[in-house]
Amino acid sequence: AAGMSGGIAYVLDENGRFRSNCNSEMVDLEKVDDPEEIRWLRKFIERHRNYTGSERAKRLLEKWDDVLGQIVKVMPIEYRAVLEKMKNSNNRQLGNSS
Image (cartoon, rainbow, N blue to C red; front, top):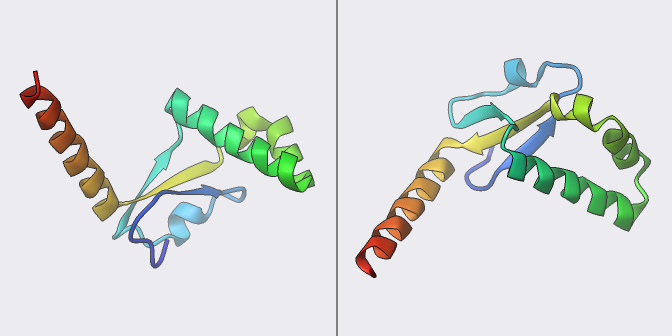
């Protein structure tokens, strides 16, 4: 996760060592458990397979339930703070417009 300052990364941690090898001072490591995010991620991999013919993507999709448990969401702490500020600002604007 070195050099991450914005955006979210998804890491396939097949050997279970990513968390111990990741410097988590600047990022949070999370499970992907939001149903909407899971659908988006699967669709993303499906599109990759369709566009590239990737055998690896095909195998991941075939074992999706197992693979999903190996995916780590990497969220930069500062990026999360920016998203929260934007969400709060939008909520305030919506509240003021009614």
